[in-house]
Length: 413
Image 1 (cartoon, rainbow, N blue to C red):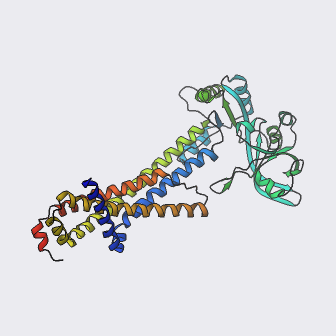
Image 2 (tube, rainbow, N blue to C red):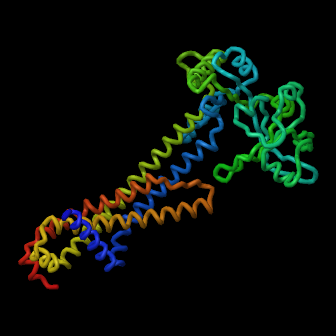
Image 3 (spheres, rainbow, N blue to C red):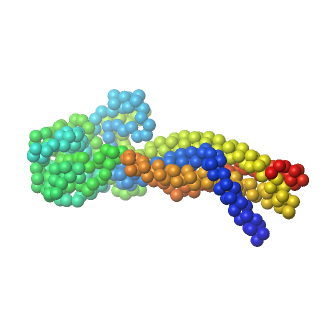
């Protein structure tokens, strides 16, 4: 009971000491404030991006994957990219038909290809619209949500009909207050009847995901040919089969292309896990750099706290002598200065938390970067800053506790 009372006396005394020297306390805490703000800001960016990647970037689901001519996932390597560009041939319709007829671990597989062009409706025009040629099963393969109408049908694909499924940006631009179903767009001067509208997806780093028009893949081939930009989307029998399904597709494609066992793949297969793993590697590097920077700030801040606490011990030598003379034990003096140094550093951590929170609000309001402050970052930052204060306060506290009361009382006030 006496120990608890003594502890709270130390807390109240430390708080009074901090309030009496606000400017000195603030200047002492600059290093810790910067360290805490940096740590929480980096963790907030990583946390926000993790959620964003999981919810918006990857549309393949746990059981889906893609096959493309080449893919650079993670760190971009120009030499590797040029090597793949030289080595990897375009995917073909013949390979798709071969896969479709030989795979045993897929629910379904579809083709897709895209390019950018202008789209007209009456006298209005939208530039840079992504024209996606897709199989009729792409709605399920790419998790396309429908708000109006329907998706493209198999019969429309087989008959190469000029029908279109549009993104939210196209609807907003051409039909802000009307129903677009049945209306006719012009793509490359050709009329396409709108049969459906997709649910808005938002944007990635300011780049809209809704500025697209989907048309049947066979119609796309009739307009642009099937020799360039073709890719496949596939869905395994279940999430537990996704890796075996990828291995089966890899084996079949290698067989079709007559690749020898010692030759590298001349195509790329990736899934949501591949994207998440690549992102984890990137964020791991960012986090490691942030930890290095934060460590430097924390050490600097800790050294400043120690110097200030040594100065405080010198200033309060006479007071320490009085306290010892009236019965204060060494442990009481030690506790008083350890609590004070810990509270000083923890205060810097709390200020850093507030600054990081404000930074997150400003960044989210002014930029497309999705920052989200995790509670774990706040807890880690405040605990770390208090620990730094405790560690670097040990020497000054011990020095104060070891003062001889007679010598301390002789010190000038």
